[in-house]
Length: 200
Image (cartoon, rainbow, N blue to C red):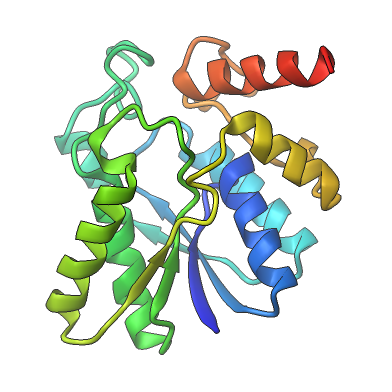
């Protein structure tokens, strides 16, 4: 199976790639710079993870999106947690992933969504609707995989450890700073998961 993996350099997409690779899928990792503050740090982490997995990753630049659509993920003047919603972000990522997959004859797109959906574009219903709309737009059937969508961050970290994924290569902070901010949604999810793991 030929699969475009939306790869951010974070724990979730990295675990997803590892699991798909172990199933002998032919992966086409795609990193999308949509203007996020963490783009450079994520790209660096994404390249490290892909090198570890012996995969070639491509970078797509649509960074002007984040300049025109303000969010705490793209604008340092906004609150990184309470104003984190970036309208249509995951639909944009899936659409671009599907377009890239179309030219690669890879009609499966994988995204590392987890179960704790905070925003409307992180649910199973969204995934089904996006698959239907993108298939119609391309004139051919595509499939969207969200293999971690029944799991939380705790589960994702457990899977990473079980499969020997080097978590020190991943980057999981929306700030883009070298030192994790501890305030963004991603940091808080990771901190809570690690506390749960340390208490086991």
